[in-house]
Image 1 (tube, rainbow, N blue to C red):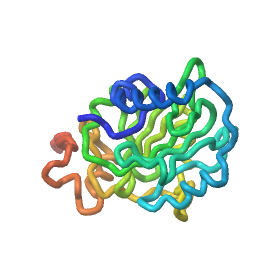
Image 2 (cartoon, one colour):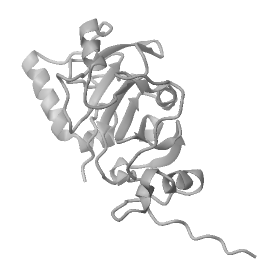
Image 3 (tube, helix red, strand yellow):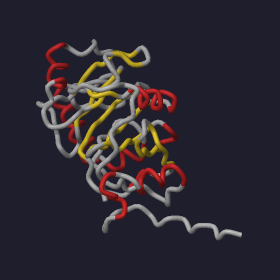
Length: 230
């Protein structure tokens, strides 16, 4: 099953989003090419579109991140329910068609999308953990993180594992009040994690609202057998 996240960095994400990238490349071609450049910080009008996004909470890490300015945001006009809504930090921004070109790699993209049930098996090597009090999956060698909160998946794509983790620790709503350090709201769905989670992560999943990971159709693997007492 194809994932519903936007891809701009990393080979496995590229494989999953060939259709979107083809459309973005076509847009760039019509516009006269997508050359690497250094965009200015986001305009007040564009930021306002994101601040008034009406459908659900979208997440960001503020106007600046790791010495990089927020340079673009999708907002309502550019919203695609399949891909979600994104904010972008740093270089390589070409409107909504955002692509890593040449040696330029986007320092950070945060995409918020309504979660649709799927398996994470297509993400390749990954590990599951807890970040900000919610289940999360780290993949692409640590450069990509997906957190699960409410009815949403929050995807972080960065050019280094350290930046990805830093961004996860600073996530906060852009279009609603919220803290950049408090625990996120638990997901109301059972995320399609690979493997059989154990320890604190398993306990967290077992106690999600409505015990959703115990419902028929949940993709969560079976519990590890308990060790018999001596």
